[in-house]
Length: 174
Image 1 (cartoon, rainbow, N blue to C red):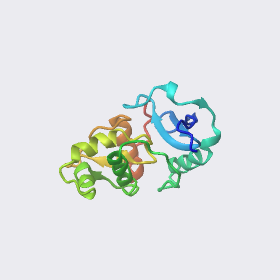
Image 2 (image 1 turned 90 degrees about the horizontal axis):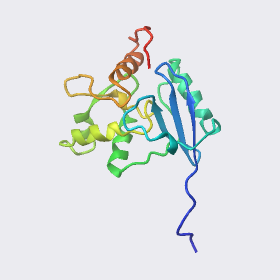
Image 3 (image 1 turned 180 degrees about the horizontal axis):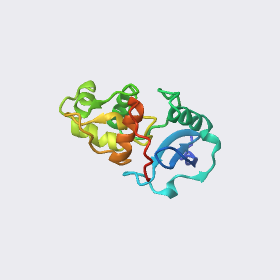
């Protein structure tokens, strides 16, 4: 007989440095489930991150280092994206936006077969639990303008400039 009360998921976290400030990586049962920036909107409370343990994150950290060094354009990591079916469908669309490219909220809504859902796409984009790796920073307004970003518009601008090769080397304070 199956146990109706399975054990709670095990969560661990680690904090790594990046050109965009410290990144907190969170794993659920050893699979990357969160990447959060300092001051990020919709960042879960620290007490939900689990015990500090860098071991589940070795490959994620290796790929992030390669990305920030300009040597990696597509992440290849198992992810545990927890959200509604609609949110997960939006996050899958984000993963299809190529490095250096952008898409509007409306384009993503159309790709999902829901052309009137650009606001819902924006809300789902803002709740993306694995920033950078699931590239929510690549979503822009219909006019091409930079619009909301959970990590802050300055970080969004810097990430897009980095990916397009037009990054200013002026240090930012995060």
